[in-house]
Length: 108
Image (cartoon, rainbow, N blue to C red; front, side, top):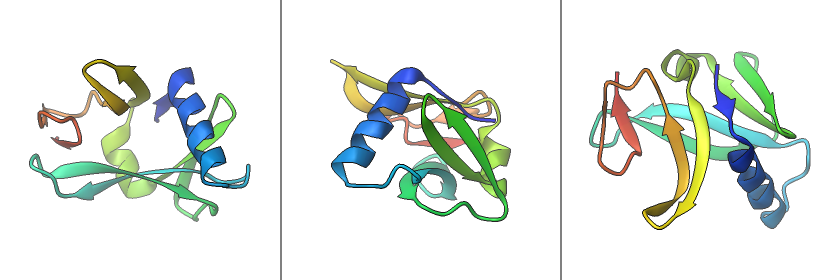
């Protein structure tokens, strides 16, 4: 399933606090059609675990992944980078065969 780095978990906690989200909320990670490579990642906060969700617990946060998205996210690492070359969440997805230049869309 998905792995979350400690740095990414810290940023998720920070964003949840900034938005006033309760501690029982989690990050919903989803794969949807779109982007220049065909598939793209979608992140949002969610307070409800759905019936077909897998729940990943890491470093004090929860990540919800629906069954369809999980097919594309096996062994993916969610990281956060705050460097000179750009700031944001990064997906290290071994299933991605191609990825666009900005890293927000991919194909399998």
